[in-house]
Length: 222
Image (cartoon, rainbow, N blue to C red; front, side, top):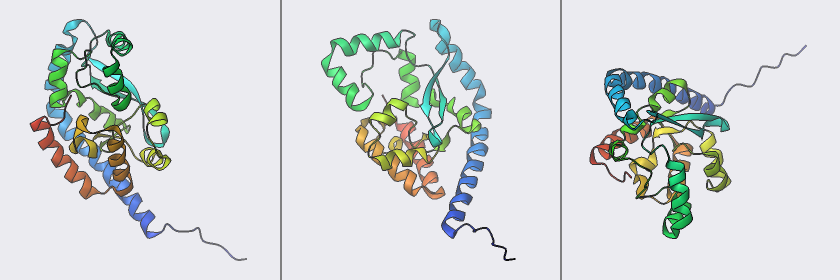
């Protein structure tokens, strides 16, 4: 009787598996190191956001690794009637509608509160996503988390979509350090695609250090 051994992983597969484990360990460790001392600051931000009577946190469904949806957390930066404000603007302002259709963002967004603009310009609105990292929804570094609508309509070509679904989306990533909201949508997709295909711990470290500089300078934040 001949026994056949199970096929062993190739060297690239073993290396990739080791990288994923190391990346996940670093995500959890670094998130805890950042989160614990910032809890008082986050509590203060939460109270300030809630002064208008709305919730302090905003959860929006995004698509994560393997196509699994998750609730991406942020401090709320928009008015409680933001959806109605956006709908009215897009129905009456052709310039704003064209900008929205092209980038899924507005430079001068009437939905954003004054305190929300401060949070966005300093990226403090994204601190709750450290909880997403601890839960395994996200990574510290990765592609920008997108909605199902973005993934279906804008994440082209198909190889870019598959690359996005192969990794956890990140709090920061190549587009954040490459220009943020000043980049066109196709350029963001291209940067995220390149990251997913060529990710490494060295790349992650470089992006994290560059993120600090971008946040301090408030480069490209809207």
